[in-house]
Amino acid sequence: MMRGLLALCVTLMLSWGAEMAEARYTILGFDQLEGWEGDEHRAALDVFLNTCTDMDDPDWDPVCILARRQSNARTFFEAFFRPVLIEDGNPGLFTGYFEPELLGARRPTQRFRYPLYRKPSTIPPGTAWYTRGEIEEQNLMDGRNLEIAWVESPVDVFFLQVQGSGRIKLTDGGMIRVGYGGNNGHPYRSVGAEMVRRGLLPAHKVSAQVIRNWVQQFPQEGARLLRHNPSFVFFREVNRVSADKGPLGAMNRSITPNRTVAIDPSYVPLGAPVWLEKNGKTPIRRLMVAQDTGSAIKGAQRADIFYGTGREAGRTAGRIKDPGRIVVLMPIQRAFALVPEG
Image 1 (tube, one colour):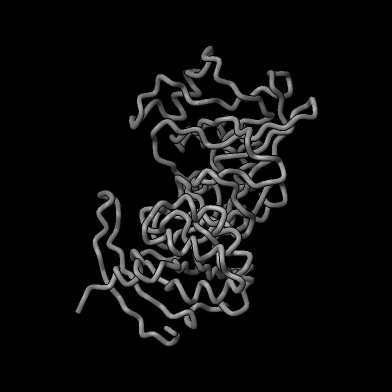
Image 2 (tube, rainbow, N blue to C red):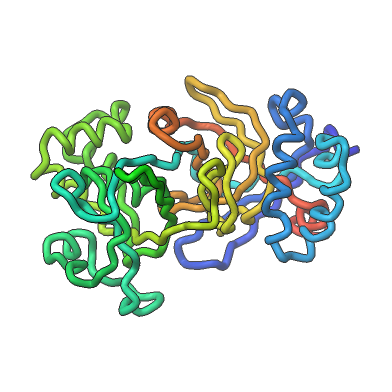
């Protein structure tokens, strides 16, 4: 009933920190979402149901209850939500992420020498600890008995930290799943951007695989390059998620390939349905759910698409760096609360 709605805009100053930019909210009609009619809305509704009960918000509770009674998913979204375009002045940027699957061991061996660590309990909450470079160069994790497993390469450790979770296939046939267990309190810095700044690569050639290959080809210079990122991620062993399900996202629920997206929760509510219009070589027009976050995902129009587990998912995710836009589906009362009276 809101098709053809003229865009209603409001500019609000977000108050969640000095780094937040001014946000502009525009309410759209569903007919303004390119490709909306052709999506498989039922698949998105099923993913939404996985986490909507965890949102604990009076605006979202009723739609979550109603969602469980719906036979027509598209009708449900159109009846109880409004598409809201949130902009902060920066262009849309889509990247991809995945759950790595590495070989490893419970004990160090000549082959598996690089550990994944739990977070030290001595790090005071909310404070910055040592940087990645200081941790590695000073061997600050040695002797703490915090190792979860050992893998083959320091590059594997680095990219597992970037992804935030993964699976380790053990030499004895077992499997360990690890999830994000905290960090050292330092901000993420892009290694790819640093390679471009140093003139090591042109911007259009930067990808996770290219970075991996370069670091492995030049191990000493590569180690120094990786330390450009001062953030160091710790892990925890995840035992309650079966191997056939996706890793845990920021809502502590399994996430779904090609339907889960990581966003900046300062702008987009965790658990909200999000319409993606990703351009580039592999365009996407799809309803996803904002079930995850990431240290590099900052801004109203910044999104990271979850592509699944393993090497092929990693290759696909590593190629994604595309423009486009995201539109958040908000409950009607929440959407119109963003519009000033009069």
